[in-house]
Length: 122
Image (cartoon, rainbow, N blue to C red; front, top):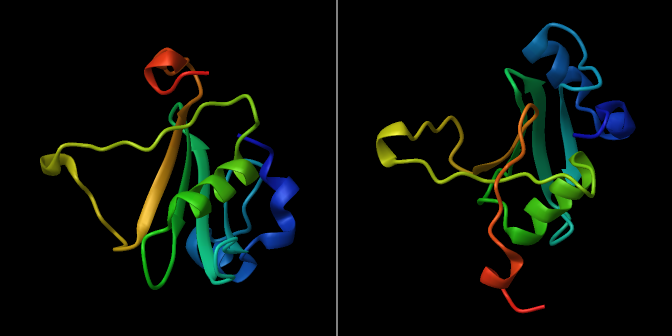
């Protein structure tokens, strides 16, 4: 994940202090961005720890779409990093916000990826 101080211009400082008791740092924080799709706010919470980089993306009115998730991935992850969204079994589903999706990236190992030909021909 990128150093989050690069995104200080979009930090939600009041919310960070309320949630964390202080402002975020280079690996943790809360942010507000305008959607590249319709200019509406995207709430983003990013964290590092426990062997994972994590970025949650939410909207007030609907689930973020593909373009918005790509927008956020480009802001938070390096161009050469792989991050994923998981589909977990229903029995393991946790939901604190009805319109939130997540990016995950392990920091101590490399995620396996299928050969590109299995996705589409080059």
